[in-house]
Length: 151
Image 1 (cartoon, rainbow, N blue to C red):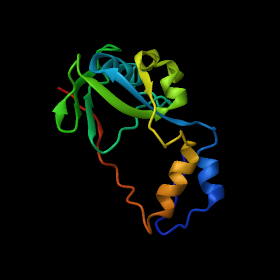
Image 2: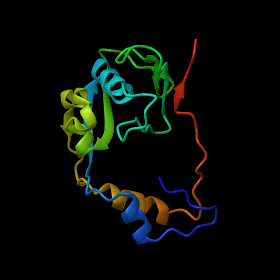
Image 3: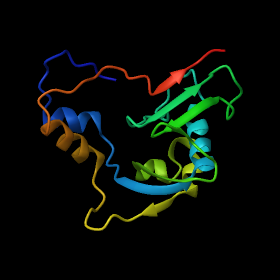
């Protein structure tokens, strides 16, 4: 992972180098039990660093225990301020790679892709570029969305 000093002006080349794979965004809907299993699958290699480690949006938070057995590490999983419930259906934005079970997280395959009228899938690099172009600065502080807890 590249670290950029504060004040660095990122270029198109920087964005493309940081997002080298041509992944498309997609929206899927799946039950909470499958969403939780997908997160467990992505956490199973912890504490080893892998490309499959979960990356969560601001409305999500996971507390997990890396010393617990794989697939039993999540202690709490919250979306929009509420605990994830097994039978509730959630709409989640992921890459096409993740949605197809990439990085060994096959539970994502339980998701059903959702079409958004008038909004075709975009490459992740384009989404990142648009995000950066809309802002003068980006806050890069770690926000603790995925938190290792020890009981």
